[in-house]
Image 1 (cartoon, rainbow, N blue to C red):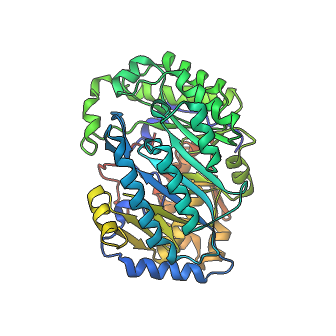
Image 2 (tube, helix red, strand yellow):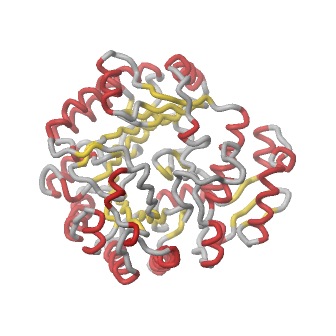
Length: 466
C-alpha cells in the first residue's frame, strides 16, 4: 500500500454517507445490557485457557478536560478543579484490583494507553500512583518491548514541557499523541481551542529529547472557517516537525448528540466540495513529504511500526484505532472504557456517577457488552482484513471459518458489484482488493459485510465516511 489514492470528487460525493468507523464488529451501539459480570468472567476464563497465552493491552480513560473544544464528541467532563483527578485515580486503582484477578498473572501487558478527555489533567503525583498500581496489579512487560502511550493537550501541562516529558519518561512512557486539529487562529476561535504552534512543537522536542520513540499528531478537516490556505500552513508546520504518525480526521457534525457542537454555526462549516478539497490537500501534502497511507485517516513515516506491521500482516484495529499489537485482549479501565476479551466486548458505565457508585460498592462497573456469535466472528475477521490491509483473503477466511465465501456472503457480494463497477474494488475467487480509490472508502466497503446495518442504510447518528 505504497501509493497514495487519487480522489475523484464525484465518486467521493456519492459514497459520503454515515457509517461506522469499525473499531469493533459488531459496533458499540449493538452492545446489550444483559451482558453481565458472569459472562465477562466466563470470557476471561476461556481466554486464560488458550495456549499460547494471549498478552494484554490496557486502556485507561481519563474523562476530564479544563475547557470544551466545540467539535469534540468524546466522553468528557469539563472542569478546572484539578483536585478531582486524585479521587478518580483512587477509584481507578480499585477497579484495577477488581479486574486484574480475572486474568492469569503470567499474561504480560505489552501496551498501556491513557486516553480521554485529557490525561494530563492528572497531576504528576496522581499519575505516578496510577502507574505503580498497574504494575502491582498486572505483569507489565519489560522495556523497551512494551508500549506506554498517553494523549496530551499541550495547552494544559501540569509543569513546563521539558520537566513533564522527563517525568513521563521516568514512568515508562515512550509514545505520545498530541491534539492540534488546526493552527489557524480563526478556526481555533470557532472551535474554542486556542493553541500556538510553539506549545506543540516545544512539547514534541521535549519528548524526543527524553527518548520517546513515537510522536503522533491529530488534525481535523471540515472544521468551521477552515480554508485551504490556512490548512496548508498547518500541515506544513506539522510536517516540518516530522511526527512519526499523523491522523487526519473528518469532523463529524452531530449537534443533536453532542451539546458542545451546538456552539458551532452550521454556516461556518465548509461545503462538501470544500471539505473534500481539504482532504485532497492533506493527502497530497503528506505524500509529497514521504508519509505512507495506512488506512482510514492514518498516515505514518515508512520506518514507523504501523507501516512495518501492515507490511507483515500484523496490523490490527481496535477501540484505540490502528495498533501493532495483534492478538491482545484489551482491558479498559475508567468511565466509558471498552474491553475486548476473548470473543466478547464489554463497556463500563459512561456516566461518571454510575461508574463511581459501582466502584464504591466494590463491583465491576459493567454497563453493557456482547458475546460474539459465530457469524459475528467471521464478519469481524473480514471487516478487519479490509480496514487494516485493504483486502480480503477469501481462501484463508474459508479455511479458518469453514464456509464457502461466495455462498455465505452472497448478499455482500451483490452490494460490492456496484463498488466494483465504480472502480473501488477488484476481485476474483481468491481475494477482494480495494483499489487506490477504494482505500479511501474502506468504511463503505466494510458496510457491505455488516449484518447489523439496515438495508438500505437509514439516516444515522454515525459520522460521514469522508
